[in-house]
Image (cartoon, rainbow, N blue to C red; front, side, top):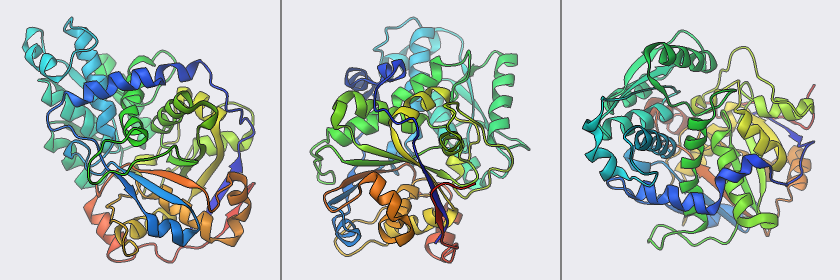
Length: 412
């Protein structure tokens, strides 16, 4: 079933800092309006798993299903389209509110821009697609071991791909170096000292999915939502999770939900930082091996840490079998619940929730989070089957179905 480790947040305060200010409902409305200007934009569904909620002893489970966002199978396109658009509006001398048609109409008025980024796949697809749609181009760097299907997905939307011989974090550094040398525009989804503006724009782009979830559109496949009591969010570099947390904190204040953050066991900088309890964001060295390619990051975004360290109740790591089971549960639902196609990074929240509600050794975590019969839990399926071969191997063939099961609260 897979190992689960967790630590209570020693810095929990639920008090916003300056880092929360760019994620207000007013900014989210501007971001939504920008995304709505793109061709074929539509909100993604919020799916209710009523039967699973009853089975696990919860009031409600809702899954924001990003598997078909812009037809690109992942939420990451929200960040890429927004950051690319905001950069081009400035570059072309247009107003901040310039939408797709205006940006497209002015594309030839100045020399084309080359955007560069590092990615496990999904972010690169978003940046490359946005660049091509607006008349520009992208150079995309992918880490060693990237699935061929993810490489092809970037190439299919016009990105020029370089697969490196290093892990994700080293690949980010290479993309930054080569962008600086070539005069390209780096569109990276994590920040570091001296590079904060465009990662912030990418984070703001993610607010569209959160705003849709709490202000649902009245479509047949979308259910209306009262504020959730709990949110389980996955972290790679932490930018997505932090944007959602900051938006909900600004929107709901003291009524904002309890947040649980989940990372892969070998790629868990936020868990490590919380466990050490120094208040500093620490990196994870060594192999970042995990089937959750989108979360295989050893260096977190410091802007995200400022937000998450204040608001997350528990930091959790899981082994790959936990997300594999989540994929199978979502893809093979109880009668009456919709099926959800979730990739390895997309299903980890559901896999963790099921483990917490079912395993006796996780009672202490369940009690800490106050997950009980009146709890309404919101999850985000961040990607569909972006690696179809691995998806079938897990869902069809039962890969990782017999992983070891253990949980510890404070590992050494």
